[in-house]
Image (cartoon, rainbow, N blue to C red; front, top):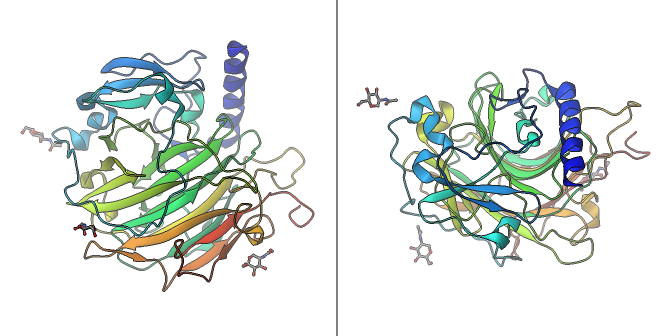
Length: 386
Ligand SMILES: *[C@@H]1O[C@H](CO)[C@@H](O)[C@H](O)[C@H]1NC(C)=O
Ligand SMILES: *[C@@H]1O[C@H](CO)[C@@H](O)[C@H](O)[C@H]1NC(C)=O
Ligand SMILES: *[C@@H]1O[C@H](CO)[C@@H](O)[C@H](O)[C@H]1NC(C)=O
């Protein structure tokens, strides 16, 4: 049973790879070389291995032997264990203060280690790319977006609660809900992405991070290649998040805050500082972000009959269905040069590649606990979206 699943995963992965592999999105340096159906060997520096409930295997890796330190720019890097001043954000109440990842059922990573998910084939399939919101014609083929953004500014951080759903997708597709911070021109865009994603091979939404400094020509998902320095022993990148929201039922969400401190870009998930991207990784983003963006993407490698993909974005419902039905992103805030978070309000614009397939709707009521927020998503293929 487990074996069949692995073989299927492998076949799907090879298909996905042959469909999507181009120099536009090479998610990590080892893409295309993975053939094994077996789990990888434990990561270098593994002191303990934890078997997750959902097939995840987590290696607890000595924090000083994590992948980041394989990066030539980080050879002499000293870990910044805690950002000294975690900025305050206005988040209102949270629907699930305790972020849950299945592997915690079977153990914890000891002090001095970080959890790294033992790679599955799909970790090497990382079709993230840089959306150029000022040049709409440059949206890369196969990608659809429904986003809200601010541009031509000086952004030192971004914050939001992402409503957590498990959209249904097809083979070779990707659906995300996320935050972006970008800087630079088309050829040298520096970018950080954080959010949840569902890929062909994931059964539940997974926490992901991504960074690039050359507009996605070389991009790095999670800890698959060196760069991000993880400091938390509680949250595993690439591992599933639960519980997910139900249509007209309980709603769940994750709080994400990205903020610049002493030059580095820190990431906080819920109340836990997960780690940071050292300043030295970046060119443009070493200084400041010029754009911040929140929203959803769907990537489609194409359908057999050429019709639009039926991969869902968000919850799969259109924004006009509203709370409990459509997926939301709330408490949109950015950090200004004083290190203070402000509501993303003036200058916030929306963009949807094909509103008849996936749409976005900014809500006018900004006074409640949700402050600046929007609904986004859709079902993809329909009569209106052929
Ligand atoms: C690391 O330190 C060594 C010895 O001080 C130095 O030669 C090297 O240039 C440093 N590397 C980086 C990337 O700073
Ligand atoms: C955050 O808010 C708390 C409570 O209002 C305050 O004590 C603290 O100094 C604030 N932190 C920052 C970094 O502004
Ligand atoms: C998309 O959403 C906007 C904002 O709510 C709305 O005005 C527009 O009619 C929607 N478009 C479609 C095709 O549903």
